[in-house]
Length: 116
Image (cartoon, rainbow, N blue to C red; front, side):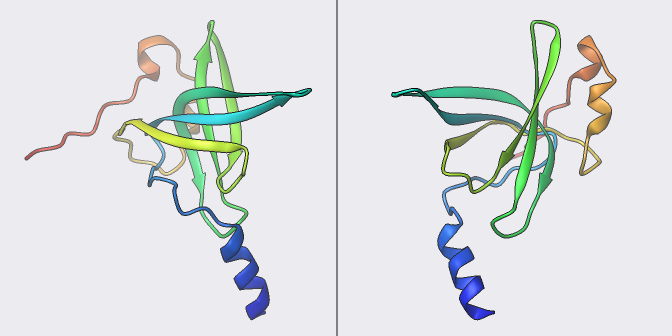
């Protein structure tokens, strides 16, 4: 059992910022098309974060040309170049699937107030 935990620790990435549901993030994904390799940026709102060991994942949603696009990313995937925090959102649930039903300005998320 100890060998399995050690192998999982080696596979995990430690350069990932802390984020939660409601935050807006940019995910830089490495795309390989034939012999070419490029970086594609997917920016959207985090709907869900599933923590854990190497099987952790998160769902990001964005609206592109009026169509909602959701993408599930494995958190420790080697195809993720980096993750950037754009803004923190203030939500009361851990999974904000209700955004799927909302349109336009109703689908906005309030920003988190930071007082100094």
